Amino acid sequence: MAKYFSSWQVVRERMADDPATIAQSWQMLMGMIKADLESGKLKEWGAFPGSLGGYSVIEGTEADVMKFTMQYAPYIAFDVRPLVGAAEVEEFIAAAAGG
Image (cartoon, rainbow, N blue to C red):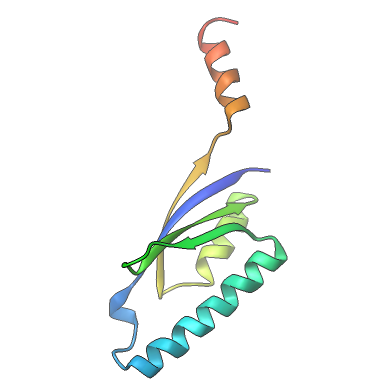
């Protein structure tokens, strides 16, 4: 199954200014993230300290990635990239070398 790396960023303009509401929003998002980790949709998730962003690793099809990212819209923006493992890179190198 394919893996995808995504960097994510909170869309600040979509978040409230009230600290209590911000805390509630983060609690809701963390609940969703924990559920996605437990279900296996997310393989890894983390936040970058001192920013409103982080990363995640998603496993599945392109459609799975679309479904995953859409559930966080419009509050989180994603930049998703496919991951290629060492074995696949070695295959590409061998093919490029004519082998």
